Amino acid sequence: MELKHLLWGSATAVMVGAPVTAQTQVEFWHAFTGRLGELVAAQVETFNNSQSDYVVEATHKGNYSETLNAGIAAFRAGEQPDILMVFEVGTATMMAAKGAIKPVYEVMADSGADFDSDAYIGAVKGYYTTSEGEMLSLPFNSSTPVLWVNRDALSEAGIDPDTDMSTWEQVGEVLDQLKEAGSECPMTTAWQSWIHLENLSAYHDTPFATKANGFGGVDTELALNGDVQVAHIQAMGDWAKEGKFIYAGRRNEGGANFRSGDCALFTESSAGYAGIKAEAKFDFEVRPLPYWASAVDAPQNTIIGGASLWVMAGQSDEEYKGVAEFLNFLSSAEVQAQWHQDTGYLPITSAAADLTREQGFYEENPGTDVAVKQMTTNAPTENSKGLRLGSFDQIRGIIDEELEAVWSGDKDAKTALDSAKQRGDELLRRFEQANR
Image (cartoon, rainbow, N blue to C red; front, side):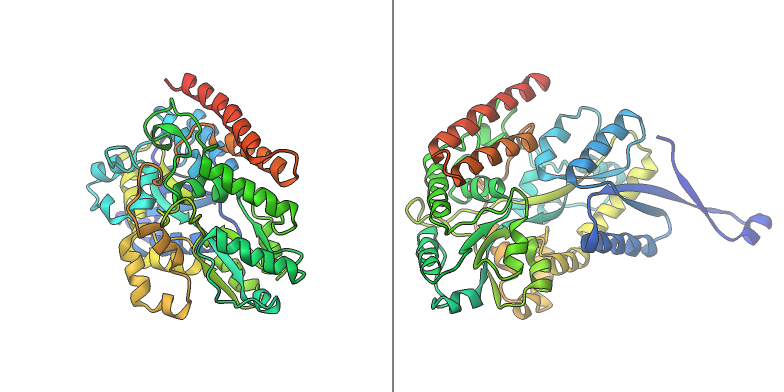
C-alpha cells in the first residue's frame, strides 16, 4: 500500500517556502459503537494530540464478525488497514492467513520500540502468543466471566445476600430457595458456550480440546464432552426444566433481564460492569465464577473473551513505526488503567492493575477486582491459557444449538455434547486440510 500522508502547516508557510511537516497516517479498523466507540475515539484523539509524527484514523466496521470479514476482503483487494481488531475466536483464522499479518513482536523489533511482552498478564498474553512466547497480536479489550448478584432479590426471597456462592453446589441451593420464594428468574446467562463450556473447562483445569486446546497444532479435536462438562450442563438442564435457569439467548440477551431486576443471578462478562452500573436500580454485586467442589479442591483460572489488535502486512516502514508507537500508547499503564475502570475490561498489564489499585478504584468500587484476581491467582496451564481453534465462530454456533436442545429438554447433556464434538470435529478437519 502506498504511504499515506496528510499535509500540515499553514498556507503562508508553504508560500514562503518553509518546510512542510508530513504526518504518516495509520488506519485502525474496530468493532465498537456506543460508549465503547466513544472511549476508543478519545484514546485515538489523545494519541494524535500527544505527538506530531503520526495520525491514527479509527473507523468502525461493524460487529466483530463483520470487522474480521472487512479486513479479509480489504487485504484481498490490497487495501487493508494498518491495524485490525479481531475477536478472540478469530485468532486461529488470523494465524492461518499466510502473508496477511505482521506479528506484533516483529513490528516492535523492526521499529526499535521499547516493548516487553512479559509486562502483560499471563492469562491474557497466552491467548495471543506463539508457543515460544512471541506476541502475535496486541491484547486490547479482554474480559472474563463472573457471577453478578442482585442482592435485593436475595433479601426479598429471605436469603442472606452475603451467602457464600463460591461453588455451583451452593448456587444450586440458592436457586432452590429463590424458586420456592416465587422468583420467576432465579438465574440467567450470557454467552453460554464461552462461560459454561470454554471457561468451565479452563476453571476446572480440564481440556476443551486436545493439543493444548489447539495451541499445539491444527490437528486438534474437541474434548468438551468430558465428565466435568457433562455434569455441569446436565445440572443446568435440570435447573432449566425446574424453572431455576431461564435461557434468554446466545449472545447477551440475558443482560436486559438482569439489569431490569427480573433475574437474581447472572453469569456474564466482567465487561458488563458499565451497563449494569448505569442501569441497575438495585443493589448489585460481582462475585467470582462458581466452581464444582465435587470436581476440584480449588479453581484454576478463567480465560478471556474480547479482542486483540492485529497488524496487517504490506505497509511501509513509516506506518509500522506509527503502529508501534500507537500500540505502546494503548498499553501504557495510564491508558490501560482508565480503560479498565471505564469499561470493566481487564487491565492487560500488571502495571495498569497496580495503578488502578493505587488510585483507590477497587476500594471505591468493591468487586471490580474480582475478575483480575480470578485471572491472575494461578499461572495458566495448558488447559487454561486459552483456545486456538479453526472455524471457532461456526463451532460455537453448533454448541449453541446443542445446548438449546438440553435447555428445552430434547436431549440430555451427554448426547448433546457428544453431538457437538462430532459436528465440531468435522469443521476442525476441514480447517486442518486447508491449513496443513
